[in-house]
Image (spheres, rainbow over the protein chains, first blue to last red):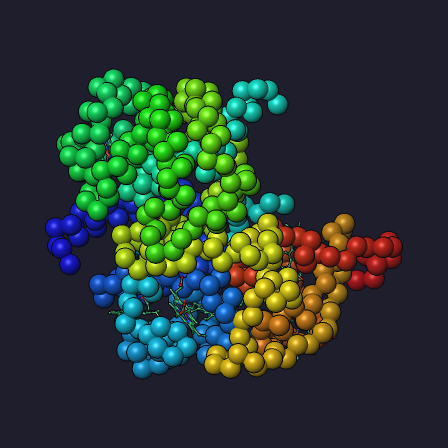
Length: 130
Length: 338
């Protein structure tokens, strides 16, 4: 980590977040879940979970029934030790079904400052179209 | 539609499509590195599109602007604070900002650069994402067919004079204010607004369009018709975490929900749902398993309840009325039967 550049980057990111909240509608892919219950407090970027990517490979049932993920953004209390021990994302991201938890920055790839939520809903960013 | 409108739309389309190669490059750099300040004009930064704020700066000449952008100037950090961007990319971003803010310098520059770019680099817009080749997906992203290298520069040159003077107005009075144009959907992770482009891992993630271009499309949500994708075996999602051969327990039971008024009735199909989901995902927490026992309304759905638990979040969104309201009312009595 280069601390100097980190500070500048941090400032820029903060501005970017202000900008993000201020006007433009989120352009995130439909169904992406941002998880930031603990990550940022613990000095990591928030986690981005892409539904589209996983549903090409698994039915909803695998995660939301077999593996027991609650269908609510932020509804699961995920600790990193749990993942490394093979729970939550770690049930697959264990080096066997999918790459292992040491690839921190593939999961912790979110923009700092964003809150836990799912990016779905209306494409217009305005109210329903009817 | 008058000629000016057509010109505007054509210019807009070019800006998004591969035809505006040199501009697209600058646009990407701008959107990832400069928009934080120049998008809204924080910290005294001249706002993109604000011709008045840019005019005096543009007068100083393109070289002076490059210099400020590369080395910094008062509130403007060198290279926008990201030393990792190449000089050429910073210049491209300056060109883009100037072209969008009433200046011509960027435009001329872009036109000059276009031939070399179009011939040499297949996907200049994706240059920042080295991990995955994304050239073909660009064509799919925009309705425009991939431009042949030769005519592209002339198109840029032809569109430019019309685009430059009216672009500030175009920003405000864009044809679609809220509806996302095709080019703004399924953006790669570096541009989607929730991934941190400064994170190394972000570059390795798959851009959605790369996966979606072989799948049947639909207007809403991801822009993918997931039901057809599954039926046509374009995707083979596992039903079991580890066993690729486990087959889903599919139940074929349609439930017709009559709707008051003129909207077609809703057919709720168990088949398409049990392809993806387990009974316990819906029963009994979301729906009591008994026909007509559940109060469902559009208001509830829009609030994220009932069908709205999934539709509008992961499954296709509410805008696709006809997928749910699929049963035409054939007689007047059906309406009264409720």
